[in-house]
Structures are given as structure tokens and as C-alpha cells.
Length: 394
Image (tube, rainbow, N blue to C red):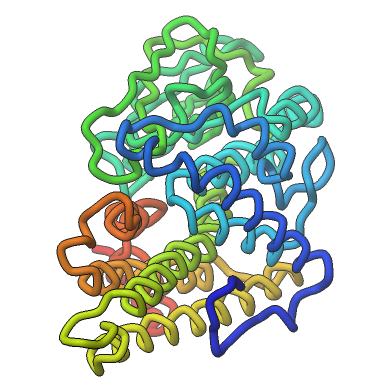
């Protein structure tokens, strides 16, 4: 897992290939991401120069097969998410959005022509993707979206209008998977469909969202559609209704459930090292009972979260992982990581707010991860419905 001792490890449960992927991802992230991430966070910039290297490592479209994708096992993919988020949630978000929210729907619901046109370039990092679902007035209730598309003649183009908000990668995206309430020609009943909106389409703009105090090393923006004409060849033919975007979110949440472990590992390992070195009242802080209690709690929760992720990863590999189990994974591991970061920050005292110690950065990032891809409360209600059979969403 790292050079720091953990009393629970999954190394012996992994295949040789999965161990190799984990080791390679850790080495790459420590060598290429760690030296620059704090600077990018402070400046609120994304390290675009690393995109080609992410592609070389197989991080883009990692769990997909064919079209230049790495075809990693679900567990191997999860392990890469750990190492990316061990450095920064924004870095993991970039790779997660590219893989699970942009490439996955093309792979799962696109035509063969769409797959061949977009996926190889996205796997090489030459085309950047984004996912447009959330709107200014439509977050946890995606069915209330106002973005709409209309087909004016049989077999003709669609015209899209609307606004998507909180969109990772949109200011630099070449292709955006946009979900809209769609009226087919001759129909009076709208249905949600997915469209591949390309950068050069007239009427499209993607202003960047400024002023974030979290995920500052991730580029966030809007997708503004002003009568954007999208050819029928850019309609995702393989899905309609909310099943399309929700299935993409399930893929992304799975990766988040693994990635949050990386942030928790980072803050734990830094807190352990700091409290072993920091001497107060004549002995290391790690020698005090309350400090050891905090370290033990974080350490043990990481172990349980890792076992949960591994178990669900093997279920996913066998095609048996349900969306509610993914809610379980995302909800519990992100909550654990956020609580770990808050606790670790307290162990640093005043130094905990300094960028050089990295803990405050993880804590701020995890506040966003706690909310996006389904809020903590929404996942709680999904689990409650599964347990009781009663819907408490309204």
C-alpha cells in the first residue's frame, strides 16, 4: 500500500497485474503529480501538460475495452483512482470524468461510428470530454432539467438550448455528452436523450467557474447552449430516459469510492509522520493517548473502506454490482475520508492550514466530493429505500 505500515492490506488478494498497476500508478503520481500539485491548487490551474502522460499510463478510459483503452479490471481501475486522489481529488476528477462520464456513454450507448470517431482520441488524451447533466436549478433531481432539444424534421438535425452548471473539464472539452429533454419530429412527449456536442458547434460556450475554494486544481465551468444545431449522427442511439445519465453516474461513483481512500491514506500518512517528528512536552505528539486514538481511528477506517471497495470491485468484475451498492461505497468512503482529513488537520495544530502539509487541501477538496456525484443525503436515502422499501425522497 505504501511505505507506511498498515495492519490490514489487500495486496495478497490482488492479481500480479493489479499489483503492477497499483505500483506503477503510485510511482508515476509521486514522480509527476506530487511536485506540482500544490502550486496548481494555489493558482487554481489544472496541469494540462500531464494529460498526455495520463494517457500513456492508461488512466483515460482505463476500465473500457478496445479503441485504445487499457481494459483494466474494476479493481485495477480502482487502485489507479486511489493513487490519483492520494495526490489531489481534482486530478482524479479529470481522469474519472474522462473515463466514466464522457467515454463510458459513448462506449456503452454510442454507435460504432461514434466509438471509432471519438474513443481512440480520448484514450490518447487528444480529445477531452465533459458530461453535461447538472443545471442551475436541477441538481439532485435531474428529471427536472430544462435543457431541451427539438428535431424539426424527420431524420434532421436537433437544436439544443439550455445551460449546464458545475461541469468538470467543460472549458477545455472537445466533446461534451449533454443530456436534454428531447422532442423527436412528430412526437409531443419529450424523452431524455444524450447528444455529443462538439467544441466548434455554433451557439456553444463554456465559461469557466471562478472563485472555488475546493477542487482548485480542477477546471470547472458551464455548458451554455444557444440554439446549437447537432446532427442526428451525434445522438447517442443506445439509450433513452434517465437510465442513460444515471448509469454513467454509477460508473463515476464507483471510482470515487476508491479514490476517496487515497485522500484518506494521504492525510493519515502525513499525520502519522508529523506527530512522530513533532516534540511537545518532552516527547513526540504520537506518544500521547489522544493522538494515538485519532491515528488508530483513521487507520482502521481506511482498512474497512479498502475491504469494502475490494469486495464491490470483485462483484463488479462478475457483473453483480448494483447501483445501490455503489451508493454504499461512495457514501461511506467519502464520509470516512472527509472525517479523516478533518481529524488529521487537528493533529497539525496551526500548521494544518498550511499548504506545504497538504492536509487542508485534501479536506477542502473532499467537501466537494462529499456533495458531487450524488450528495451524501441522496445516497443515504437510496440506501434507506433499499433497506425499508419506502421512498423518502419527497
